[in-house]
Image (cartoon, chains in turn blue, red):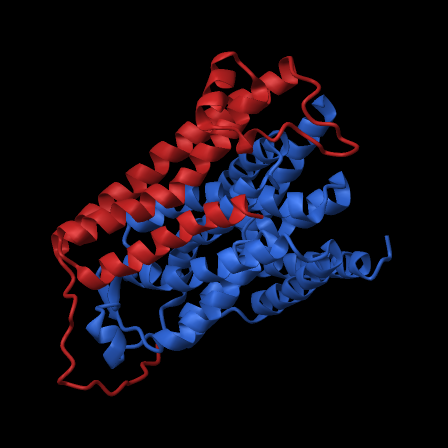
Length: 275
Length: 142
């Protein structure tokens, strides 16, 4: 028990650290670590990971909300889509085979690796489209000189469709689906990248929370595994976010792309019965 | 920075103008709620994990990962186990408190939007809240 708890704390701290540095969240590294290195069943790893994602999101989003980077109205509207997807995904996760989840995880890791390589800031919309204007979804973020910079929001239906998919992936695989959420807001709805990242971080807690509630009430969460995992991931994420301003983001991103491809290969191999 | 232009229908007026007071309350109280619940959950999970390391060495069988299904026990039963110092029950309670983070945050927004008479946003948050509660019920039935 001592060795198991210690291993869980260390692995989870490493996953949280890597997740914070890469911007992908701890789940992307935690689930494969729990499955491959600890030998947890996929469903139990997903349940523990979802709870850990709730903890890291709550910790990380506080400063972004307070400082005005998070678009709370966009988050609230899009959470309708992510929660719907997350509950469907978490419910479905209890019925599918671990091999299916592992194969899907491999595909999502490759998508995250691709997204990490082409991540870039997009243009800022000066005005919202009519629907988003009616909902007052546009906002302001602090500019380089501290002045407020206004931005608009568009294509709410398009963004919502991707958010449902992000929720399904979160509930099925125990990840925050931050990469998909940022794509939906930054590339589809025209929000600035940093606002998209901050809003995604804020939404991840509710998305993962929806899935975690299904797993917890179904009995797919092992408390003596999930508790040290949540603690380790939170500690690792705090350490990673402190180091991030001093890190070489270009090299980090390249390193994490390699890790994600390796993780995808391992999970894909397991799905094919290679273990 | 390139700026993309979008055509705006001038007749479309905001149906939910942002209330600065509502925005201020959200930006102040949301982080407070998140932090307080997270700290409570972390304290309980840390206590449960520490007790496991110190005394309880038989709750998890690493070979099968089987465990007492505490989450299916009534809350009062879990609390009585917590009072007795059961590590597994304390960790379970910590995880339950952790799941309050999204529930309380969404419920807070719902009540605020109701108070400020922001009908559409109250409806959005009510939907999310109903979804979270549905998740609990869905998990219970399998």
